[in-house]
Length: 482
Image (cartoon, rainbow, N blue to C red; front, top):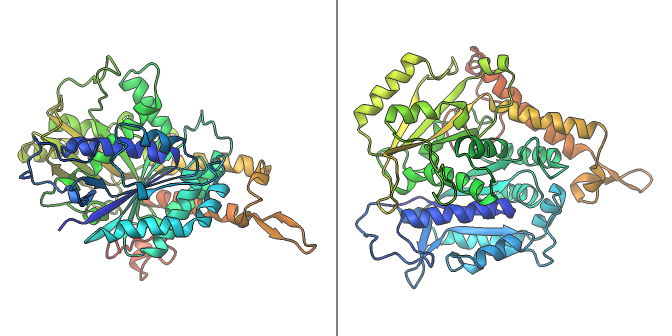
């Protein structure tokens, strides 16, 4: 029986990458843009379409997806695109006033709170179509207003409504040097608090790194947002490959994530993919990798230039950084004996530095490729890694937050929303700093926990205690995911 997963797309970014994700899944399972299984798609193929799709009364395949936005532009684009007939119209929510959140986390959160019943009604109905719901994936960005603020509220609502279901997110971080949202440090820190407390796993996708990969590796001169979204959708599709084409291991979300996250609070994952390609019509250098082997793919996945996160680390800090865990999902024509040889070569060459208190090994999951999508490469691979250098991305965000908050710059933009004001002794409405300061403390604690993971004696205090008394998040160290 498949363990179903419901995908929630929130805000402009979430809906854009979500639509690209569904295009990929439809192509890989032989489903056309109207949700109809195409004639060439054999029902004898052992795939699990039901994890992400359900069949309607007319036998069309409908994505298990809910689309949320506070302004109609992107939703309208989807409803007028080639996949306009794919989604369930009842699962699309657009705010009635259509004014958006104005790149303000407080506005997005408050508007989400005001339509709580509508949101839960959509999610509950979708959950009712599932026989054995395993969890949710959330696609959003953390810099703006809707994906960040409304996404945060939905995370809290999910955790309260479905406390035993897994929540994984694909969270797009802002370009640190070119963001067009002035208050993105505030929005990011406020969203990161909810990602820490309410998500089981967060796949971090850094716009700074995505732009670098597109320009330096794919050699795209005039980068379009659709091309960046395609890179993110590639990671999303590859990370679900073992769920949709199951093997002996890692064939459900729990199995995929449990070994990657030994410490509950440290559940922020980096992603790398190789070889990256785009449609040949979009780039004359759509792929610069001409030959692929298992060893070459696994070696490339460990190269920082292929990671979709820029570590923002000083060189001496980078030397101290360690892998906590690695999972490689390898697709294509692969002999299992080649995997063993490749892992031995990587260990001999010491290409990956692991923490001293855990197993120094790379986990590998073999996954079949779709028979309906032709690849120009014999082998491809996705890496999901828990790496301590992610803390430098948090520290960079906190540094930007501190510079603004020290001067209370633009905090008046948030004061109009309930979380950010209080009534003083004279009956006046004044700014309440508690939410900002609490969020800053939570994110700082995550960064400190990752720094502590680099120490050889990290596990010693845990052995003398019953567990992590101050842990954050939903995962339990002893039993894995709960």
